[in-house]
Image 1 (cartoon, each protein chain N blue to C red):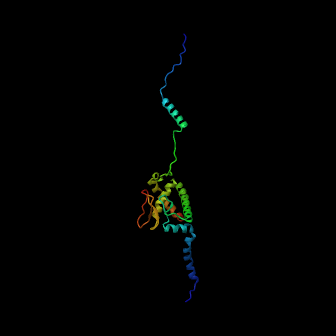
Image 2 (cartoon, rainbow over the protein chains, first blue to last red):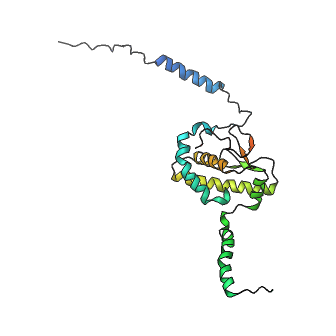
Image 3 (cartoon, each protein chain N blue to C red):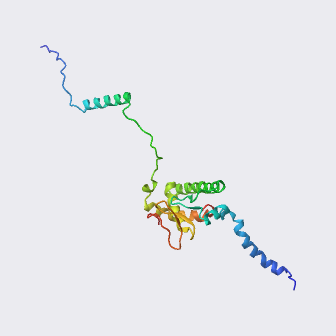
Amino acid sequence: MTYRRHRPVFTPQPDRGGRAGRHAVLIAMICLLGGCITVKAPDKPIVIELNVTIKQEVVYRLAGDAAQTIDKNAEIF
Amino acid sequence: MRNVVTAGSLAALVPALLLLVAPQIAGAQARDPAYAAARAEGKVGEQVNGYLGFVVPAAPDLRKVIEDINIKRRAVYAEKAKTANATIEEYALTSGCLLISHTTPGEKYQAPDGTWQTRGAGAPVRDPRCP
């Protein structure tokens, strides 16, 4: 009995965003070539609002320590 | 009547003199006279961020003195913040809260809105997070 060699059968793989991915890469490349993104330096200086990130509980935790520091370094306070 | 300085009165004077001199010996604790004067005159004030600020444009000499103090403050804040597991800004803001409270009537301090205020008899306007 002879076995016929099967021709390799092309089974379509589930599309894992392949086409979209390729498109994204293409767009990215075009952007790189054409310079789609222009970053303009801001006219005004960048102000980082640190106040927002400091929480009240931190201030309370540090208050005692800071009071001592101020007392011990009175010449600069 | 002539004043006669006896050994007894001298012995009593020595501790009294020492008491007078002691603050100068511990001179590191005294404010720089230029800073003390500028503070009293309202030329510089305590900012919310824990550093001194200029209420009015300062002469170069004064500017140097105040900037030096701010550099020293920053160094102290940095060291203390590290041991307290906090950021310099957190430690400095906390100190700012206390320093604004410590201002005496007539001295300048910065309100949370950034404006300079003159300390009155009452409590100063401080950041809502202040203890």
